[in-house]
Amino acid sequence: MPSPSPGARAALEAKALTLTSGADSARPPAGRDPYAWQFERGAAELFLTYCTSTALARAADPALQQVAIPASLSVAADCGLILLSDRPEAARLALFILSPAGQAVLARHGFDAPGVVASLPTR
Image (cartoon, rainbow, N blue to C red):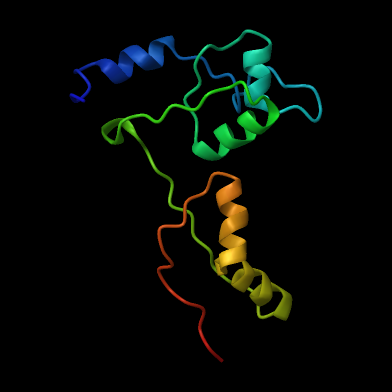
């Protein structure tokens, strides 16, 4: 796919609506997924959002479709984990998150785990 044309960002931002997380965004009813709700109420035909939000919206409304955008237009958010406590519970949680079972939970919610950068320090 070709690179976006000059001015494409400004044109998109001028047309885009802040349907979630904005100061003036309509709030969904309690317990409703904010993204699926925007489609249900007819406020959106297309939503650009993170894969994690897409997973939640599709769980709320399986009729919604996810379409991958080209890598040249894609953004990524690298999430990290840092242990700030010496409590055993914190260490167990960190180890669970890094374990195959923890990674499976994250994957079910739309997170990728390309690799562990650093391991927990030993004491």
